[in-house]
Length: 497
Image 1: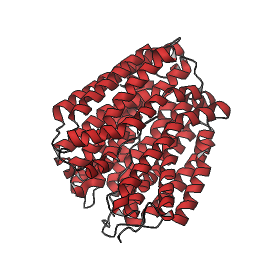
Image 2: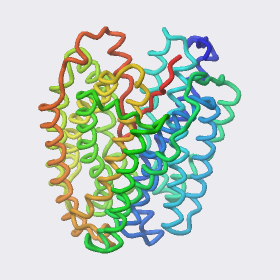
Image 3: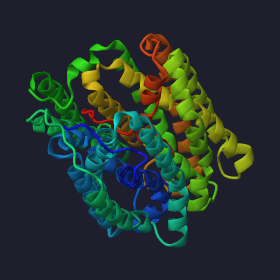
Image 4: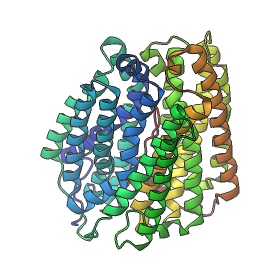
């Protein structure tokens, strides 16, 4: 690939940055507005808890399974081309979601959205890395991260306003004009780049197997809430999921072009950081799924008020997460990754005070603030730790693995926590039943977060991040998840300009 020539100070550089930010904002908005719309979707389409679970997990399923492949496609076929295809796919799928006449049709649209997201998400950051000159890259990525965080911040408010003033369908329709603008601007202003040394083959079998594995496990766990864990259908789905995952591991061990190079897990630090990600993000998934539903059903909040209730989390993330990443890069991540999950757990336990008759200032706000402080201490350091622990040749795969782990953890939480809490059928519309289930889920989620903190203390080392220069610390801390409604992890490209 030729050397990048675009500078941030030039009009061409500003256009490239704007396209990358707006493109990632399309997916970010969708991830943060959908939770606020869930109660309205359930009422309008007569959906039960399982339907709402699949509305979230249909998207996460294909996104987690295919995001590594999406990055590889961009390296081989052209990052701008795959990015544009992803935006178009995502936009068309959004239109299908908006027109869905049933929960089943909506879930199908969300599955297709995930495919588009898997092509779109890696491309926005890869375009920046491949297009800007090296000395401008860190500032460009910093602007991409900060401005993308604004999209995450306004998502719940925008989604709530659309639901209250129009319909939940506008949560998806809003993507149509955004998608058109991104495609036209990308065609006109973004140069094409590709990795001429990218592998010629693709791990098609591995992609199919991991998708089947996630689908089988998710379907089995969600269906268990309705049919019981002993149902033949549940057992069969779980068996297919486990079998497909085992086959995936075997295929990755022998494939010439594996989507997941298993030797990356030879680093103890890398493996430990991803285990912490898996456990902590599983706990987060339950909060982001259930909190806005609890606020609307049990406390009578409007959709907009429920979205606004979590704004302190976003504000704290925007202010503190990059600083936490810089501290971890200078002093080591062990303390932050131990204390952070414990603070998250404390915030979840404070959520036990949220129920019918609770006040925002006295009950909701303290829990949200404590939760946000803990989250700010975890997200950037854990991602920086993953990237620092991997060999440079596996930089793209390392970011992709951490991204997929975070999303898979959330997917599992949405599938399992309602089952554990006894939330099924139409119970989400009953304030008393929902509150009981919400409190049970928060106790389980707090326990998971605490386990994540203990695991970090026992397994995470400070050695990998110590001694890095300020520039290296800045490079690593730019790659963190901006979280508001659901975890979002920017994908870093395997190829570097």
